[in-house]
Amino acid sequence: MRPPPPRQPPPPAAGARSSVSLQRSFLRSPIGVLRLLQLLAGAAFWITIASSKYQGPVHFALFVSVFFWLLTAGLYFTTLLGKHELVPLLGPRWLLTNVVHDLLAAGLYVAASGIMIDQTQRHSYCNLKRYPLPCAYNAFLAASVCGCFCLSLYLLSALYGSCRRCRGHQDLA
Image (cartoon, rainbow, N blue to C red; front, side):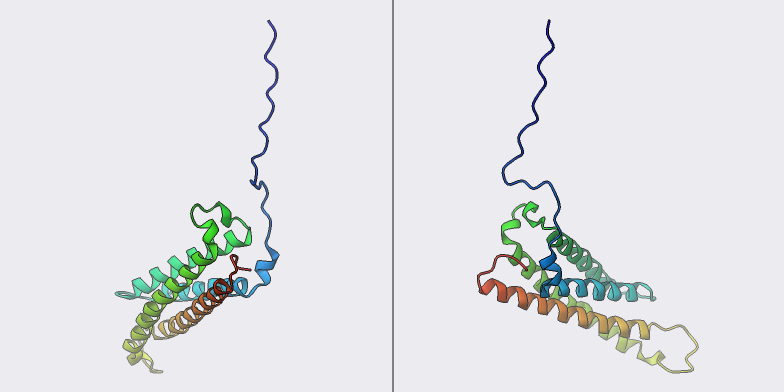
């Protein structure tokens, strides 16, 4: 009895990409630079909060910052590697997805920044030179500044994406 003939590998699927390609145009585009700044400012925001003694509503601000830092990192690397077509249902609407993400992040950063500004004002009593106990005033002040900077970056990227969408573009870069 003869052995069965060797199987041929299946032909590659049409339209499927097997390699990852770096989107250099995205790196140099305004949205690529804004995303990188959002990641840096968001990390500064949540690291500043996490390094201080916090309680109460500051937990929400920390949640917002970490959540949107992770989402922004996911969007950044997915776009950078050119793999947004692999995201089900969102691939064809990638620009709209990014605009909605930016608007939602801006809205929640308004709340997070407001919380941090309020906490900064509540801890302003310990901003004296000879105050002997540890105080989170400086950390909350730095977090307030970072939160407002994050808010402005997300608003800028939402505006940029909306302008591109109104001009009929389908991609970010």
